Image 1: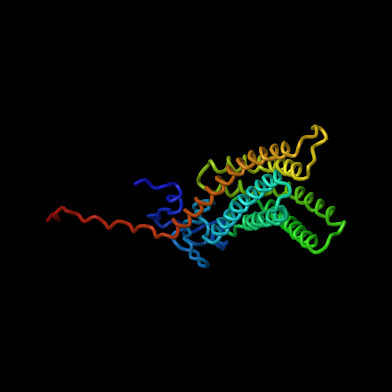
Image 2: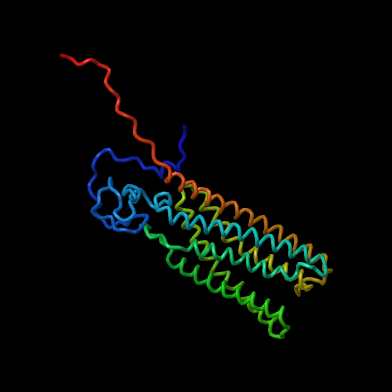
Amino acid sequence: MQVSLITKLCRPTAPTEHPPPVSSDHKCTSCGYDIRGLRPTGTCPECALPIAKSLAGDYLCNTGSSYRTIISRGLAFITCGTAAVVGVLCLKVVGALIRPSPLAPAYDPCLCAAIAVVLAGLWQLASPDPGYNGAHNPIAARAVLRGAVLVMGLCIVALLMTDAVTIVYSSPFVGPARIGLWIALLVGSVPLSLATAFVLRWIADRIPRPAWGRWVLICTWLLPLLTVLVLFAVVNATNGRTPPTMPRQPSTDRAAFAGLCVLVCAAAWASCWLVLSGMRRDIRRMNKSTASPSPPPPPPCKSTQSPQH
């Protein structure tokens, strides 16, 4: 029976000899404990991870299960949140064809909630790996990512507060405030997308499947451009305005153009969703491979030859 590459990397073979102790500074890939002076045949005194796994490379299958669980949970939040964002945008374009739409007041709160789920996943994706020994540790990208998540989270809370204020009483300052908050979200998405691209590429390169790194690079650079196009088309369709360079068209044509843009962006988001879901599936497979015990070695063969006298 063939064994997958992930299973092979997650179950390193035990050395047959007694190698010398680790002579250089090297962290345990699970807890970050310095294993210098310990033998590769032993285990980490802090987390009981085999020293051989810490010396086997910087693949995610050699790290602790807690860090892999955090990354898997973050990818799950991102995939669910992006699906909700695309769904709300599609409903908003469909609602633009119906005037007045009974669901119009619920579009913005639902969109903010979906974006908040994505931000929660990105926050977990930026969690530091305590046992990373490589030279390409994206510390700055993780800091920028978490800072952008905080700023965009505050903008979403402010948008929800403006919705509550609009329900209670009307104010002339609510409209300009909402426009400013949406502009802040668009501006904050630029460093968020750049930091996400670096962090996701760093994680994808640590999965023993070279295709993930290339797909992540394509998706993380293409999706922000398509998303800006879709938001512009949706605002154009729902507000009944056209760009200065385009002649004024009926609202049905504007909504049809916005629907086409949403379909193109939805296809791109679906590709990204498939890539992130595949990465999460590989990480979960790593957890299952490390959780299941390794098969015991076969017993030594007994000699069938009779002893010579």
